[in-house]
Image (cartoon, rainbow, N blue to C red; front, side, top):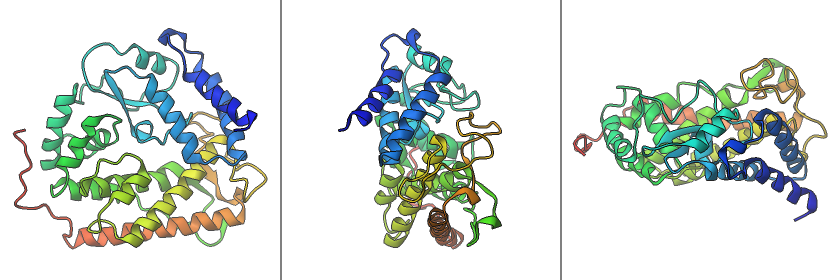
Length: 337
């Protein structure tokens, strides 16, 4: 490993390698520094999935044993720009999580471990999974099942055990199809901007989660979930197209956050409505990408990926409309468990 790449990895560890939760350095400044380090590694050819997996692993290793990471961190797909979502797995203090939240790693509107609407321990999560599977429309069952499925904790197995053949299959798919991946057009000026996370990534993440859980798999990473889907939910061609689309979308998300583009297709950064590096949700949201700023080759790859992912959405949507995912009437949903 060259010295520059080793130094970047050391910087990552330094930011999150504290032993005393009160010793967290100011996160906004660290985020800018780590973003620069990751950007250099990306320019050196590092895979965006490797960068995300490393960052996610470091953050998960910091958490108290009373909580588990979920969302993108749980799936191993977080970056320094990602908000930390966490859920309770047992009672007791969580000083490390509190320190990370105080350092700015959580969104006030995100998932918090002390949310009173969520189960408070592993046993309640496992029992609740069967209730949500039987009655997914009650109490935000689809959302809560997603949090459980994304948890970096063995209790997520309850999601894979309870979903197959249940009413949750259809409801989770409806939620995954609620955002149609847009057509980006052959000419870049047809659509000025795209929100990479909301418009492209999230629908694929949801579709992969649905396909894996409906197939009885507790896989975490999105590409692993797509690969784990059985032919009743995604056929071979659909799995291949969806996985390739995810990789294309994810690479653009990471490059937009870092202010870079794939060095194989461009010599300059993606232009954003304002300077890359602004906090998510601000006027400079790094996920809002100006399509005209992309090199033509990358825009074409993005357009093909969007078309492929949308074709999978249409296919599973048709199967849903023909009751292809109706609940199994003989299924014991295990509500008494």
